[in-house]
Image (cartoon, rainbow, N blue to C red; front, side, top):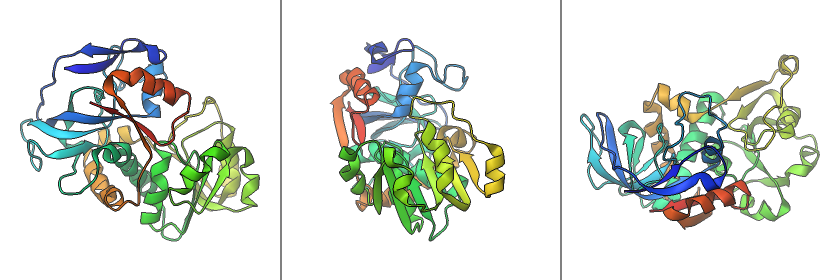
Amino acid sequence: MNAISVTAYGGPEVLHLVDAPEPVPGPGEVTITVTHAAVGLIDGLIRRGVFADNAAVPKPPFIPGLEVAGSVRALGAGVEGLAVGESVATLTLPAQGGNAEVVVAPAALVVSLEGSGVDPAQAVAGLGNAATAYLALTRAAHLGPGESVLVHGAIGGLASAFPAVARMLGASRVVGTVRTAAKADAARALGLDEVIVSDDFPAALNDERFDVVVDPVGGPQREASLDVLGPLGRLLVVGSAGDDHAIAVDTNRIWTSSIAVVGFTVGFVLAGDPTLGVAAGRAVLPLLAGGELSLPVTELPLAEAAEAHRRMDARSVVGRIVLTV
């Protein structure tokens, strides 16, 4: 089968189209005939070797890709609730492998799209991130009805799912930040109450305080986010897309301000309890079906995976990049 291989840590040039053996599902697994595979910031971090010391992350050579949509190809022993030929999407793939014609996935992390009317490109662009946002907001940030939310980097792949999910959970106000004014319109299309440019943060908020700040960006903006948390506010750290990964937080400031900093990584959470995944996926699927969550998608063929990574590294993409297989 055709697949993309990361042959070494480095830039997009380490991605190569290869002929790889077709995987076979083991107990509790399915194989999926892939039609769409997402490319996200986490793929770039893994490709560059940022997580090289983490034993749970595959090492080169490996097939990247954490989210796919397609149809069930084969069922492993003990799999129930899914059928061969059924339209599906994955939440995350613990062993990656999504940039290929066929991928193996734990059945517990596969959500049926059958009868939902959800376009597979939108499913692969939004379902996994929406489920991640749902788990992060409910399990880590404990967002309550009527609370306010600020989302940094609002049009990024993961961040873009948070506004719709926060609304679904009862948020009363959702504000977003973007890197440039040119990206403000795309952010407003996500249903944000207000959009501000990051260079104007936090001054443009005029001392407004939030119950939850979602930060997938990092850098100096992360420390400044503590200034816009109200009493008992939570800074939800879900990534470090920026170049500065060394920002430290003063813990004395946390307790004296009665605020909290909490992190969330969906892959590790679902590795501990995969049953959370499908429940979260089913909870947010209506957002995609009803159009409350609709993301800009740039499609490229599988063979152009390196170009997809170049665009992602250059931060020139609005929404998500999806490889068609």
